[in-house]
Each structure stands twice: as structure tokens, then as C-alpha cells.
Image 1 (cartoon, rainbow, N blue to C red):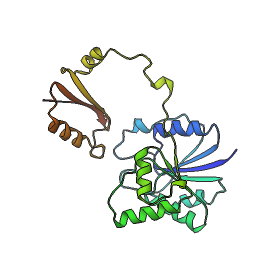
Image 2: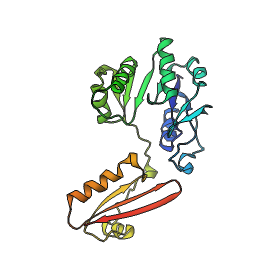
Image 3: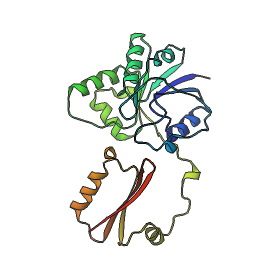
Image 4: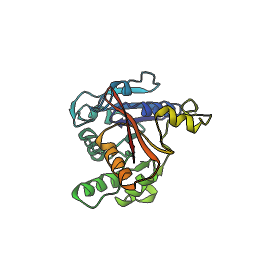
Length: 238
């Protein structure tokens, strides 16, 4: 069985599910930079069951969910059959990528949330890092477009369905729409629903602003989510 090293930032629940599935075919060692992020509820991170090797690096926290850890050298030097780095923005990941290039060892970069931006020094550095990777994994079309924008050749891009949804997570019976709207507190004929964190990087402010400008008749925007241990529900209507 092939041995894979996967370097990522946090042991997020959806990633743990993904690694559990992947470990059915490969021997997976997951190295995380941190146990949790500043803006995450610790209960969101806590997921005990896993059938792969999981290590949290010792180091210094940097920013919201990054770190600086020289402990990464130990893992990069181990004889894995493949090394996957889930990103390139943190200091620890940049150290790992630079060291792999120095050792002339191939690595794969997994990209989950890339978007295209105008050319800048930062984008130039990003392009250099991505082009040196043996492969780039893309979880959605906009990721692929961003990789192409960074001049990564098509033959180096592999699209894959990064999802850990299982049957138990799905509603097999479609609920009554009228009752569902009533349960959540919607009083209008139509409802737009946002579910997620109430934090700036999720763009909830842009959603509310766009909804206000559209001036949709008989329509409510309902935002449901949480920040830390607090839970919120906001209603916006015209």
C-alpha cells in the first residue's frame, strides 16, 4: 500500500471524513499546522474518530489558522511515496515546498479556494510555486480557471470531487416547503437562505448589500450561522 503525506492547516471535520475515505486505499499520514483556528468553534474541530495517522505540529501560531513550525522538516524527509500540500500561503507550507524543491522531490498541491486576481508580485510568486508542483489538485471549476490563470499547464491539473457527503447527511425525503419556511420564521412568499459563519471573509456583508440593491418583492433573506459559541439568525426583507 502506498504511503502518502498530507500537509494541511487544521483537522477540519470534512477533511477528516475525506482522509478516512482515502485511507481505505492508501496509508495516510496527515500533518496539521494547528489544532484549531481563532474564528472557529472548538466543537467544530473536535472529531475523534479517524483511521489514519494524525499529527499536530509544534510551532508558533501565525494569523488566523497558519503557523511557523520547523518540525515539518522531519516529515518531509521521511520516505513517503507522495507528498500533498494543501495550500501554499502559510509559512510552514512554504517551508515544506521550498525544502521539497531543494531536495528535488516531487510534490502535489491541493487547491480548495483559489480565485483569479490581477497580476501582482504575490500572484507571480504563487505562479512560480504552482508551476513547480508535479500536479495540482482542483476541487472545482473556479480553482481550475485560477490555476490556468497562474499558467499551470493543463496536463498538470487534476480535478476531483472534494466532498465527504454521505447518505446519512442527505435529506432523502423533500420536506414541505411551506412548513420549512414557517419553521425558520420566513413570512414572505420567497426566501433566500444563507447558512454559515457570520464572519467577514465569508462575504455575508456583500450578500446583504446585494440583496438590498436587488429590491426583490415578497422576498426575505435569512442568514443562519454562528461565530464562536454564539448562534445567530438574521432576517432581511423589503
